[in-house]
Image (cartoon, rainbow, N blue to C red; front, top):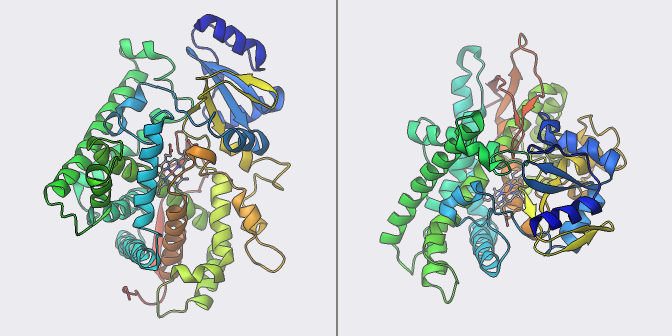
Length: 484
Ligand code: HEM
């Protein structure tokens, strides 16, 4: 029974004392990943906490996390059956569904379709690059408009629209204007998504909070509504695609997914999984990417010397007469280093989406029973002082070797896309997008912040750590370029 199971779990794993009813909720603090890292110093890299009525195992540090997610990949590939997870993508999400044969088929379809429209061959790579560059140039023009007469503005919403537009271009073959109020409002609401599904969110571990009015219940109600609204937006586009579907012409990713799920042999999925897959991909690709770019822009204005150095390198490698392209990447190792250091330093997805164990498993000599919720503290990997010198300092050069080239081993040891069976499927396209966005923005503009408002690196906690509101101003460098 559950009680005996909990008792066994309690005996075998170290961890702090858990209070009745709330468990360790009061100890989590504003930044749970920092609390988890502190607790690891006391209890070791694998320990247990209790949040409300859920016993949760927290994994910290490179060794324990890789041991779990790579050596025991199947055992750690589950997701908990949280109520909030069932509200996402019409209850058929690939991201928030437990490990099963159907989930494997679903993930494969999502992965293959994404690859087919971004990196399958040189033609798709080029077309993806063009989408991203075009969107980056829209952003440049928007930034310059907002900066007219030396004004300062908050860039988060523009970055969100740009990131969402890239996914809409891939999935629907169309983009939305930055002044499309309906689209902007929906995206603004979606940016609250991570408040509910981040590790340490209370709605799923304290279900009784849903039965009387309180702030947690309203977060939960909001979450339900924003998912409904977003799913309806995507479903409407997928239905239009279904009605005009021609098996001989694959216009975009929606068509590709319709083709595999509805017209392929034995996909194992019903047609409702098409809208769920598209919703997942747009949702996953939008908020994370926008957050990544918010941090990049903030760090560029925080460290103007690094910004100037990057621009000098872009001028040397690219010159004033064309826009940067993905081929320039190998000649711009310092830019890649700046991006990797942004990911490491901010660790803006500090804890992955919660996992759960699919069977009993032993890790670092500790027994974890089947169906235990597991939090994976990526932040602790990126801030481990044994692995990184002065981890609290922002220093891109830590990724460069003595010849100034990018050290791929060090770069690959940053953990932000997770690893193992649940690792992010957008990893490659995210890196291409961040590189191109950053390169185009820096090539075309210089950025600064309002000197009368000191910049902070403080952030809000959720599935993604987001910088607090900050304002910038952009100035055109040289001439405004068009697309080739
Ligand atoms: C899952 C990070 C961009 C699609 C994840 C996870 C993380 C992550 C940490 C959870 C892994 C786990 O639970 O162990 C990021 C970051 C991004 C990014 C930092 C941008 C910088 C994208 C993009 C897409 C995408 C652009 C797709 C277009 C997904 C999907 C999953 C996922 C579908 C669920 C995988 C599963 O549960 O099997 N991502 N992601 N992500 N990501 Fe990303």
